[in-house]
Length: 204
Image (cartoon, rainbow, N blue to C red; front, top):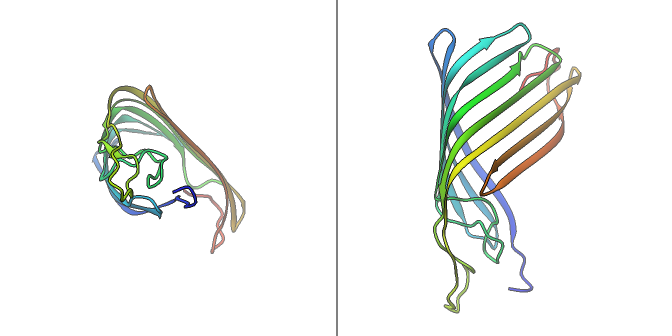
């Protein structure tokens, strides 16, 4: 495989969500999604995910505070969390569960500056199946990456801010950080957004 390239994984999918208010200051949020993963000379993969959040919303003049708990579950069809030919190199557990308290604060979407920040501490449990070292190996040569499992604590930090520069232009930045004793994952982004219609306030 020395002369062949692999990678360029692309994720495509959809999500659906439902928000309920069982009481005036309490919120129940349910989300479910499906994603497919394809790439160049890598295993095709698919995943399902779901999240349930319940907590109390505390409104303020400039921002809203949410305190509650969340349960997240996710499952990938295949373990392709390696970097040999045929693997996608992304975290793809066959089972993943996260449960714990969280706090979130976000500004009201009627200002020229909008922000959304959250932090959570959780109990994590995930496992992966054994997978071939070279999934497209036609010679029948043996070789597998062993599956593993993990249970323990973790935390997550997420933030996004967006500023309206002009009626049709906004500048935004985002940051996600997830940490457990088993893995660390982070991403950051900066983007300029053009709006088809002019606005006087910024929104997510």
